[in-house]
Length: 449
Image 1 (tube, one colour):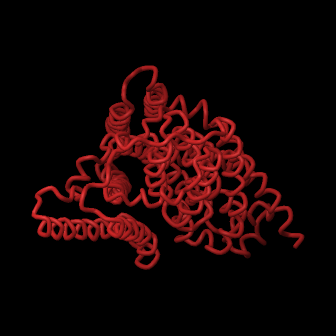
Image 2 (cartoon, one colour):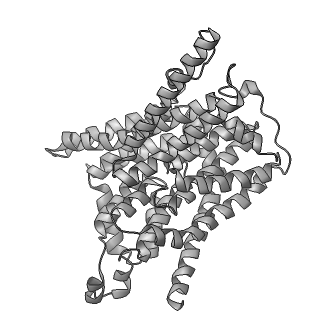
Image 3 (cartoon, helix red, strand yellow):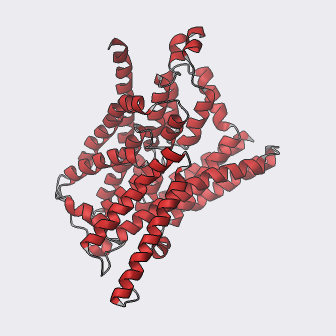
């Protein structure tokens, strides 16, 4: 059974990777792959709890989908009011190299406050207003994916995995930031520097209004555009704050934010309509924006996450963790391997499996251990937990479907797997390894301080 499930996943993954060759869209492949793997598990697994397991996995997946739909809707609503035009108007440079550095750094810090998925959506929308050339825009989008994942790794609220480790006490916020900020910064600076060689050091051509997905409709002045931009960004920032205060899942905060933005946009619509007596004087309403949500990307998420959920339920990920524990008895190698795997398999179940395999130990357990140096890495804020946070987050950039940020960019910009593998994966790998080297050096220096 396990072999069949893994084989189906590999075959489905290959079709997704070769989408540009087979001409078959990745979304139906992901859905078919998920259905086939769960079917095999149901027929051959002899698991009386299969229906319960399926519902649990669907619930976990839908949390992400609801969050994604809410974030995409809010970002599209801001854009439909022309809010992002205010930001792009403040970017005076048109030089592509300067733009690449600017967007990379902005993404790096923004994803530490927002999650990397929401940040990627915002930055890709900005990118569409700055870069007209498709090839250059894909290079920029690839760097944005790397920067979003790197930025999310050093912040306790920047990624789902960092939230998991922080909320469960494996790491503390202050030590996480202190230990991982420099490695994460290095892992984005190096790829950005290399990516500058991929684009000409010339000025970007202006983007035609006809090429933009949305435009600012009549009746919306600068003050309203700025107001919707500020309220929209604050509504997105509200989500991690809500999570920290209440402990509820982030999608609940996103639902509240979307509800507020929806009511606000309706009030603005009817106020403008009554003043101008025009039925369609204000176009940007959530009901209209929802019609333009990228459903293929949503369904691709559903298929991929449900397929990975089947592997997790079937014990494949747990067996993998056991194998790493028995055959690789070294924190850097274990965490590094998990990082590589996170480019293929969603990092959330990988981190969850690792947390189950390696519980947080105390000083008494370290003293009683036959290998104190190894066990020391698993105390709170120990080397392994910081490595795991870094590797699982940054390693997702190695392939475009290895992270939520990559999948979102893939859907919004229609970037194919092969192109990303050829042009961006090596950059991400160089940055990933450079960051691990920085952590290694920090680990050598810290005891001497």
